[in-house]
Length: 133
Image (cartoon, rainbow, N blue to C red; front, side, top):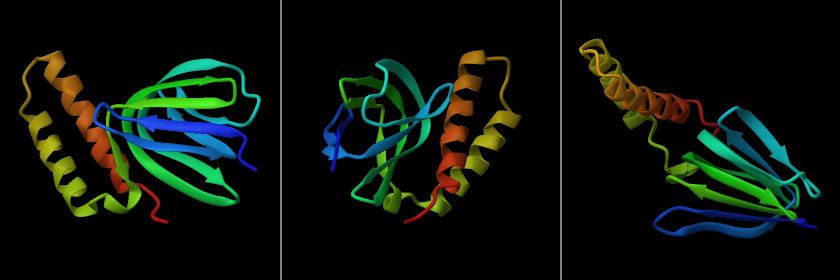
């Protein structure tokens, strides 16, 4: 019995719109789970795996950040970008991480550039740690 409505959308398209039993979300301050009757909240999201369970079957997607709004047994996720776990290219992620590390070595004093590279590196590293189903 699915008691939570999960909606995940990106600026380009809707990704998920279905009833689920539970959701685990990568919040900016740490991962949090949502079960029916959860206290309302709004959270910024960190890049990572958004996992959900429906009828005992676990599924997951990779999000690159965004915002989650939880209320009235509904979880609305406005994601910057979503990647199917099966579409993660480990070799490309490894090469991207190595390239970013090299860019960081040659980076001057620009805090803005550093933060952007740091975020890209975090996303690439997280993709390398994803569990395949």
